[in-house]
Length: 265
Image (cartoon, rainbow, N blue to C red; front, side, top):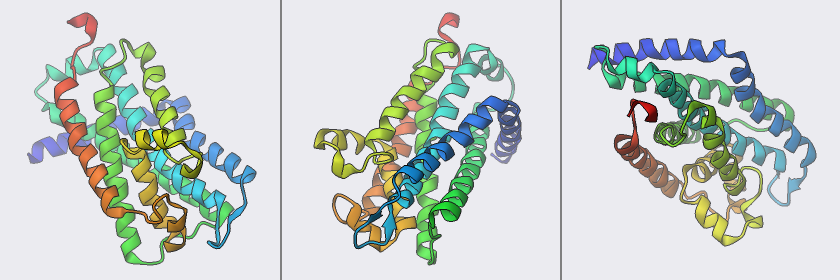
């Protein structure tokens, strides 16, 4: 077990280096949510009556969730689809390295990228929009478990989704499209109060809605609870759904993941 973990950590270092060598991918991953935050924060700067919370601060919390899921889901889904297409997975499967070490490396690499994403978006929110960092320990604890559960669920979903594209060329479109749609119905860009019930019900099935809700509880505090549909952050339900996605995502991976591309049979 210790050898597998050590190999996984080593693989994580390699995956992270490979990620940062792709300058275009790095710029897009980190700049896209920042650009959206600056745009939305500049356009919608009003304050919610009786809360002391600005629309910009709500967007910051939501885009942190979307940034983390994007770094995990898209990075995993597209990256693994490319590894499968170019034969990397097939070669790794034929080496003595435990197959689990590959996934450990991928997960740890995604964790590093996601933490950088969170730090950058938090800095923008604090400096430009007056977002306040949690003032008590319990909210920091909430931040940790929401991010870890959300990241794990999104990454596992990305691993499972990597088997959907028919080729590496189509991976970006196939993986990105549902994620963009999910952002619009999960309260990242459009408040739930402006969405029809059927869209809210669909978004409630997926982890992004609950990750953003948990993050709003961390950064908006008790005052922001009245902006939620139920008047509460429902943290117990957030933990339940995100935990279910970790288990469900793992089961999806075990049943759908392929080490070879379709042309290899």
